[in-house]
Amino acid sequence: MQLATVIVQGLSILAFGWYGTLTLLSGDMVAEFERYGLGRLRVLTASLQIAGSLGLLAGFLFRPLLLLSATGFTAMMLLAVLVRIKIRDPIHMMIPAFVLMCLNLFLVVRAIGSVGSP
Image 1 (tube, rainbow, N blue to C red):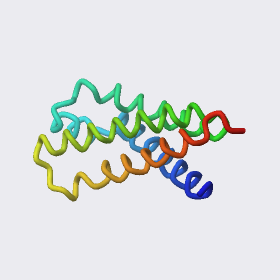
Image 2: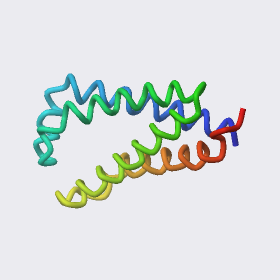
Image 3: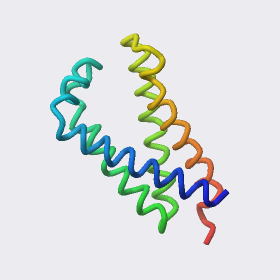
């Protein structure tokens, strides 16, 4: 199960690092956050995604950071799914946030079992 954790952690690092950077730099993301009704939270969201990616990366060496970052991403993606439900997006547009929520929830469960372990 360790290999699965490493793979999921790596995928989450890449996904949130990429999405956070895109959210900061892309004009399309400005419009997307306005569509969500969250334009004022775009920079904060992007910053949290980049910081969380770095936290997941550091989590390879310091497991409590893995737990903190994965918990934050799980909550963030739950909120993302709820926002998409609220604005009545089709289900296929909710799938990426739902999958990332599930992947990070997996990391939370794995991290809880390993915090305090060598």
